[in-house]
Image 1: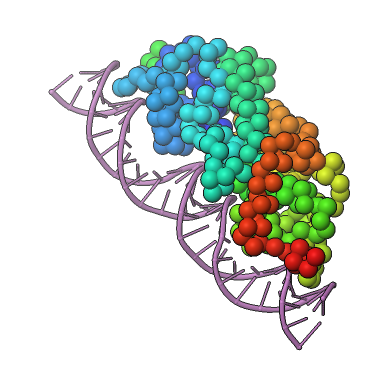
Image 2 (image 1 turned 90 degrees about the horizontal axis):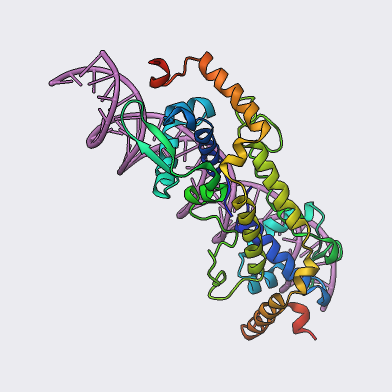
Length: 159
Length: 159
DNA sequence: CTAAAAACCTAGTGAAATACTGGGTTAAAT
DNA sequence: ATTTAACCCAGTATTTCACTAGGTTTTTAG
């Protein structure tokens, strides 16, 4: 099981996208400013998210990304899977030859754990996160700070 | 959350120890032979396991390691904790300054996940693993192979 | 039409962790 | 005294992470 900042960054960015979905496409520059994640790194993550059909891109000024599906139907497990190609806890990736052709002693244990984690993260949708009170509080603070710092996207400047 | 071969190796080695506990202290050379883990790497892992008081060492010929407590009272979570100093999924290690002094959007989510994983692995004792049928089958095969290959410890040779 | 904004793409890089190797030293049993 | 094994330390190849840097392409606004 690999669950590092990579997966955390991806989920945080997707959550930011879901929160600001009502104001049209969200640019990676905006997400970078609000969530303090390197723009180029975000590009790499969103490349994978797009290939997994979790987001759609709109190019050109005023463009950005939007969710491919409603947030109710996007689950945290999918996001982590999309950026972390290897999210199982077994190490042998489901195959049973962990140890020179033989199954290792603890193989079943890690399979069980994988299932456990996966089903936990599969039960959490983006929308359910957006609706959490603490997420709303943190998000409101981040938006206020971004405006203070003059981090405004094109469409916000021109309307 | 970091759960790699390091933690898997540690749990596998401890399980091997628990399985062969009845035959006196188990040497790392034996575990290395049966579980196909580098001896020197095992030494490093057991150094940490000993510092966490999960195992006791007996030096000299016929020596090795044995569990500090009965296997009923040793849980997988403790083993992973002992070798992987950092087993929480948050990245900020429980502190709430994930993002330049601010809490990050998904902080609570990763805290929940950490609790989930930890409580799952805290519910599994070494003894409960030893009693699993598939573990017994794999172990029996490993023992047979070790004997074939002449991997016998001192006390087995002299009796 | 031009300039700018944004996605998109590729290559490289420093830091950290992993999974080892190799060389010893020390303690205890035969 | 020799051997067995734990113990300890230093180094190392590989991988991953998180990021930087430089570009190209598409699209909109002026």
